[in-house]
Image (cartoon, rainbow, N blue to C red; front, side):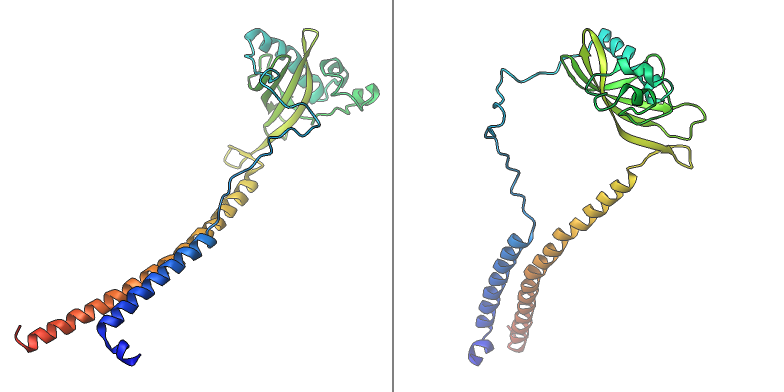
Length: 248
């Protein structure tokens, strides 16, 4: 063994073999250490509780015409002014579907017990809103409301679903999506900012899952290369000294 280690050729061969083994080990470690995404798998088989969906029974979205938008506003505006603001809850009773007022007596409704968050809204006769989904007789919109003057509230966004019954649109649900508050600089900030910061922190932490294995892999590859380069430089120095001593 001592004779093998004293031979430069054997040392070089052993270095190459060791480097190859280290590289293979590094690749294997990286394959197991790095996170994997096997993809999402969905069960597309019918569950048996309902009929499998076919092309024939898929309901397609339809375009909401200008006339239908005006009809929506004829229900939406008075509902917000009377029911959402709680100014006259009794007037909002006939503007909603039976499903929305189920579980609430007329007396409770008139007293302001409505299944929608109260808000001191200031809404124009022709409010602007975005259509989220539009199916025959069923539309969901994104409604952005501003507070009335003097109210200690910021703007708010609602997802409002309306259903058509007897040629008239009725409010079926009104759920707050996001509320805002005035910042010291006068701008509007969403209450969900803290959640965004948490998501950003988690994303930063997940980067270490890639950095640490990558650094280990780099060390496994670089160390043998440095060792081989050092041996090559020593061999070149010995060869130059040998040639200089013999005048070659």
